[in-house]
Length: 355
Image (cartoon, rainbow, N blue to C red; front, side, top):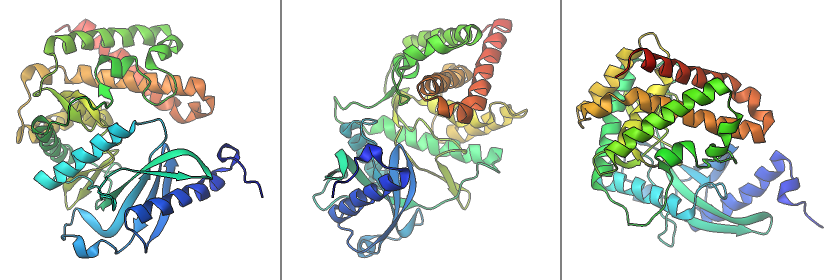
């Protein structure tokens, strides 16, 4: 009997095929008695795994839910294998050296964090990783300035670790520098440099002003250990930050990369950028951060510029993606309008109050 090709399958059919990959991967990780179920298939395919096979080796730690794991089948072409391996090595080091509240990778039976799986029913090679399941709850529907204060403390610890922990030279990973924000393809299928052509004239003008200003700032600062290193890149109380007994845990480092530490702080503020009491949230984030790491005044002064750059970057990604895949326009349009209007207001405010 001839099987349908993977591309011809329905979503349910593809999930069935990915379960074959998951089953093979779990065996390589030494998981032979388990239950696993789909969490998400959008980019990476994620399965939650329940198994007691590692219980004898686990040290009690309330950072994780006992006997629960996250199996990631990485999306082909989105991250190079060496970039995924860098992420996993970084996570493992943060856990081993500082016990930071981040996912802890599990090694396969061959000692590797990242394994390759092939199956005749699924095209290409699939890379898989297994992480301990982080305990915590999202507060995105009910967060307070206190949560930004706690997030600031955690981000300072993550950044301090990045300053000291240096990976092997020559390993490539995405970069949140000028090209990484405004010209590269960051997953939409269209390079951001091409997405500029589809902006309205008003938005293109404002976006260009922000891009040029931040290029000048980045050129002036340069890139050194104290201001530039491995960052999460997508850590906010509305995404990838969980809380347990009032303390934060960071998850989903898939989009991490090299960037300015102040950019990570800008990402944290994106969720409250339009709040009437934005300054309170901003001050609490920085107060928490300052308890473990100092941020030079010149970087604090440019925090909103990096926030505007983040909005330009996201909007370019969404513009390119929705141009290629119009069916996603309704899903993203409201946020595209919100981010673009924020950038226009930011530029107008800078014109009225030049630094």
